[in-house]
Length: 134
Image 1 (tube, helix red, strand yellow):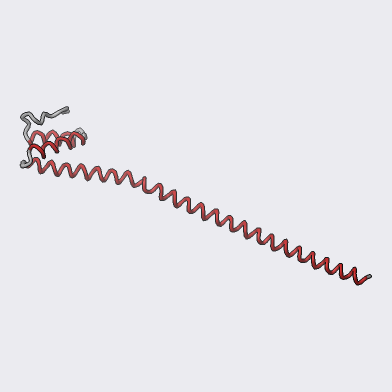
Image 2 (cartoon, rainbow, N blue to C red):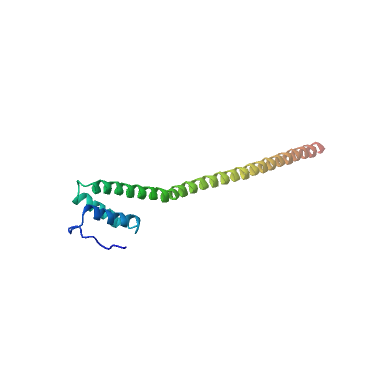
């Protein structure tokens, strides 16, 4: 049985309001209306047992909502961390590749310098031979 509104100022007792709020919470899953009714019970019937029960139900709803927000935000926390780790890994790979290229170029440069040195020695030897011939 769906209820649409509750007349707080009318003849509803704390028990009737609590029953309606409980129905909203568990049967209809309308937490907004359930919370509104639980607060009305606390405000209008502060000394009743239902007021204490309403406080407990509000705490349960708050805890459930907090758990839901933590569960959904877990992915929101993991994604930036995963992106950061992926970026760091990319930088490490790029840096390693750059070092390999620089090392290869350095080896090529050393080989080039050795070749020039050999050619220079060879030219000096030829010049000495030519000068000795004259």
